[in-house]
Image (cartoon, rainbow, N blue to C red; front, side, top):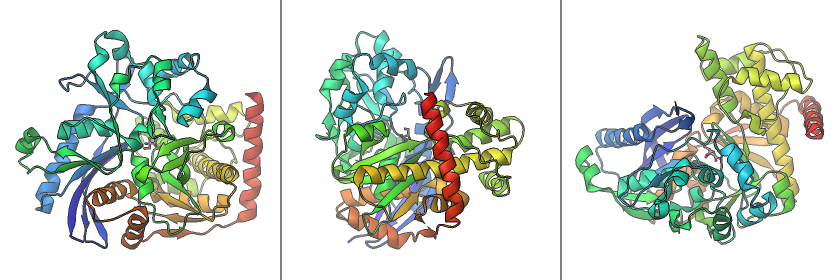
Amino acid sequence: AKSLQMMAVDFGASSGRAVAGHFDGQRLSIQEVHRFDNEPVQLGERLHWDFLRLFHELKRGMMKARQELGAVPASIAVDTWGVDYGLVDPKGRLIGNPYHYRDLRSEPAMKEALKWISEAELYGLTGIQSSSINTIYQLYADEHLRLYQNADDWRMLFMPDLFHYYLSGEMANEYTIASTSGLLDPVRRTWSSKVMRTLSLPESLFSPVVMPGTRLGALRPEICAELSIPAMPVIAASGHDTAAAVASIPASSSRYAFISSGTWSLMGIELDEPVLTARSRELLFSNEGSAEGKIRLLKNIMGLWLLQECRRSWAMEGDSLSYAELTEMAQHAPQTASYVDAGDAVFLPPGNMPERIREYCRASGQNVPQSRPEIVRCILESLAFKYRQTLDEIEELTGERLDHIHMVGGGIQNRLLCQLTASVTGRTVIAGPVEATSIGNLMMQAKAHGEVHGLGEIREIVRESFPPEIYVPADAELWDERYHGFEQLLGLLKMRG
Ligand code: LFR
């Protein structure tokens, strides 16, 4: 195999990074060349992503890679968070600033849309649990589509597709990111015209679905000139960050659950075909797309968003605390044994998170965590409990016991959470890599270059290149008892509706 230098740009919901990767035929090594914040902007009534700024950061990343590496990358690929998109007109002009999935406009739109098609039918057609963030509801609520009559020749590009379009001039919808929309048929891996027609979404908005690892084209001449870099292929590697992260799980067997831990925690398993049963719908599992056309059967859990938002509130009160400091605080916090359901959509919108957590505990008749350490502990334990519940559900759906949990992504830097996850689930946690998303992105590029041949090989290379860390369960009885308290709480909340 020849030696490959590649570039991955990974946009997360709170930060982004440009990473250079070097694959020598056996091992991958990575170097972060640029890191930046991704802060949404509230403009009038709407919450937006700052797309222009993000594109600017992408270009800065490319320039820095050029300066620091000396070598010209063999290719570049972008991945981002799911569900969001931009609309472009036939000349390729961006119609407005892309909306943020946490914008509240799509919540009433979801209710409205579900008058035309039942949740059960929609699940049968798309395998995606109903959530107001899904592209389907965002498009249904899209003011531009409603305002303009001449949208027939517009195209809808998901965030990674949009970056790829402005890099290469090629419009395509890549499979993994398209699978987050709630508009894709997970059996045929193509758009569901039925769903589009039922909701009167113009089918002309959608482009052909291309599989992960597709070469889209070369870098546009204008960008090459602007950055004075040579042209290089732009590859749709794995547009969805979670799919990229899952591609890089250093697993050697198949009996594991994964948790991709960042702003969200995405917990699930990888399968060859979707699970579209009433039970998986009831348990709120989604069937998203994975590398090689596989399926990720997973659940969205609020994740470190709860902590990020608390941190933001406390910073506004004048106390800037690092994540390490926050976790340290939690380690020594008094036990209030108060929990929240980290799957509950009430935590979706931004703002005033500490008070919302207190309110949740108050309303559910629990001790109210007062201090910051108590709140942080409540969040971390609630997450671990949600992981255990989700693990039980996955085992129920598949009828198989899963021996261990692979945790990947930036969130595993929170070692307390990894340890809690092991202890509460009673499973060994294999943690790493931290940069799973960029690594998956890079390895899918290497695959497109024909230098690696499949997911099995990719995972072996990741295992060799980035040795994971192991967490062993502790205090089983104690956690069992507390977990049952949590189950009772959920049961009670469900009864109350
Ligand atoms: C994680 C992620 C999740 C998706 C959420 C919203 O970064 O991509 O998979 O459900 O963001 O887009």
